[in-house]
Length: 388
Image 1 (cartoon, rainbow, N blue to C red):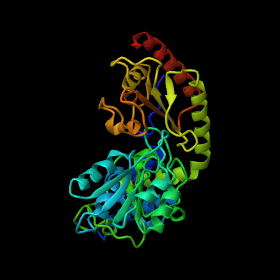
Image 2: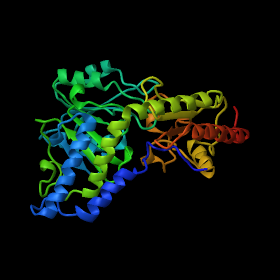
Image 3: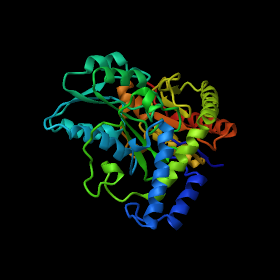
């Protein structure tokens, strides 16, 4: 029995997206910058995808710039704003950002930029009042993750964006984990910049997008032919973008029903594991992604060094079940999770995090079986615990 429960790491490419990619590779393979019919067919495929992705966010299609993925979109937002200024300014992020935000911010900090990292509470949520207090006269950018990949917590984005708007500060959000899972309306929210990724919503890997509010200025990361309305030079990956567009359109159409179904499965999963005291839920139960469960291994006695979140991941993998011990980008590192540390967990607890994220093909039977296997694994590992 094979059960995949790591949809926050990546999702399987849906057949409709694969069909669109296949069509493009067979007949619409021209360079979209060329003005002959081959180029025009490729350009039409890109523009169709632009409309499809824009509709998912209730955005103007001209505000969507395609990228190679969420990491590039995040870097373009951060560095693109920073490069508008001849001298270092001040920017604000949260203490639970993805590394594609925290790394470029750290790079700017090493070059003289002032950075404020907003704290989060035990559930991983930011207090909007902290943002109000952190804004300075020279604050030029605030970037707050929409939904945290490790613990599933959704931030109060509308409030945060409103605060930035009142202070005339550019607001960016990394919505890679949120897009296609919950409803996002960039116009209603008043967001200036927003990043999304294709492979998190059943599109192909290698495509993403940055929403750029009309009228907002950025310095492009890449110099070249001026593709993507000047925002992102380089010949576009037409098949990936076409698949991304189809996946985004279907995600929008299915969002309400699928979200409700996933919430039901998620809550069923939480209930099945509620009698396992070693598994302590992390994140915010109310403000949470519909498909997301996360736990921290917290027995009454300390874990031995051999038993961490990765131990559980490996044991479940042997049983044919795929989960994660944190963000997939950092899953090879046996270090305490910076996200759990920021939420107030100890060093010992922060290496005991696990994440189970549901998807379109998961059923109640998958949930029941996984809960049973996970409990058996924990029961088998209990004799190895070192009590003090």
